[in-house]
Structures are given as C-alpha cells and as structure tokens.
Length: 65
Length: 145
Image (tube, rainbow over all chains, first blue to last red; front, side):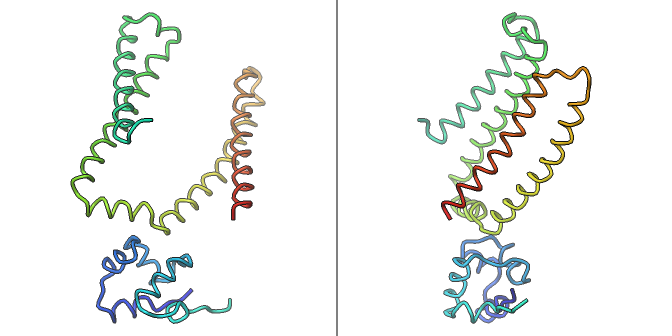
C-alpha cells in the first residue's frame, strides 16, 4: 500500500528516529512504511494519522490490485 | 513466586551448581552421577548455558535500570509490531521446514534395521506433539479472534 508518510514527516521537520519515538515503534518500521514494504496494523495507521492530524485515507492510499 | 531478579539469580545459581557437580563427577568424586558416562558432560554443558543466561540477564537488567532511555528503546523494540510480525513469519517458516526435515529423518530412521523402537516412537511422539500444538493453537486463535 502506498502512503504519504515520508512527505508528511519531512513537512513536519521530523527525522525517522523522532517519528519512531513519537509512535513508539522502531526506526526500521518507519523506513519500511515509507518504502511501502510494510503495511501497518489499523492501530498504528490510526496513530500515524493522528500525529499528522489527518484521516487514515489522507495518509495511506488504497489501490485495487 | 520469585521476583524477576530472583529468578535470574536462581538460574545462575543452578547453572553454577550443575557445572561444579559436573566437574566433580568428571573427576570421579561423585560416583552417583556416573550412572551414564555422558551425564557429567551434559551437566557441565547445561550448567554453563544456564549460568550464561542468568548472568547475562542480570547484567542486562542492571544496565537497563540505570539507563531509562535505553530501557524505553528496548521496550519499543520488543513491542514493535513489525518486529513481532517478522518474528511470527520466521517462526512459521521454521515450522514448515521442521515438518519436512524431521519427517524425512523419521522415515530414514524407520528403515534402519537396528533402530531402537522406543527411541523411534519417542521421536514420532515429539513430531505428533508439535503438529498437535500447532493445530490446537490455530483452533484456539480461531475461537479468540
């Protein structure tokens, strides 16, 4: 699943380590999310959206296979 | 029953005791432990493993107690959902490999003429228990989720 995580993180002036710290996940998880290699749980998706004051749909882009 | 620190100390102590008893048994000072010729070696090996585990856990605990930031990172790494998901996938892969590899070994042992039937049946029992555990856990998770 594609997402705007990297764009949103950079716009907020956060490093991957800082975002990872806020979300209480590892830095590798943030890297994998940004590369689209890992799809988060619904709980983590909500937490991410909340950090940026957006809805999940505004952060994660669902595409039909 | 024991505190976390207490259980680490207990593991360390049991390990140390096993190593000492194993060494004494190897020197012939403890005839009661020489029932099997491999028992002293097993005691030393198992004891060294337990001692190392207990000692490592105690050192780790001490370091984390004096470094709250590191303790927080450790907690995050341990609870990280991607780590847990990857660990579950790795375990599932290992299970798949185990089923074929252990099954092949059982078949190979079964056709060895001088194979001890009791040993073979014990290995089959372990195999069945592992598969049974997987099916039981799957059914339990199906009910819970």
